[in-house]
Length: 193
Image (tube, rainbow, N blue to C red; front, side, top):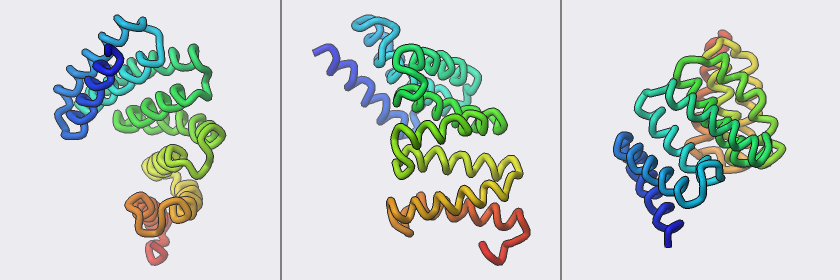
């Protein structure tokens, strides 16, 4: 019944977001969130899930301040309901870090990743996809902040994990190699890149 209809609306919004139809996705996410809040209350796991998706659609439209506010509120709710190391809270912290980075606030994004990466490794494992995504994002931010030696060391360690996880030709492994190359080049070691 009702829960299925809400989740189907959310899936439709996901498809619209993936197609780059961010405004349409936002409208669908808002409808899913409203229906969920009416059915189950405004302070539930569904609020966090649907609200998180809505915040990404808002971010994808370049409305970073609005997305950040929403993500901070949802992170606080997830932490209150399930704890700081819950999967929901870690997912919201990851979304927030991406938003801060896209908003050009790399020092703040890095601070989020400094908390996030060790927690994700504890909860999901160091070889989990989420751990590798968050570690890669941290490497990219270290490079952006000019902290190339750290980016290089973390990128090289991540590359080994990625090869073990997905193979040497996986797109994410190749992206990690690009980040390593950027760090090497910035360090004056382009011949090694």
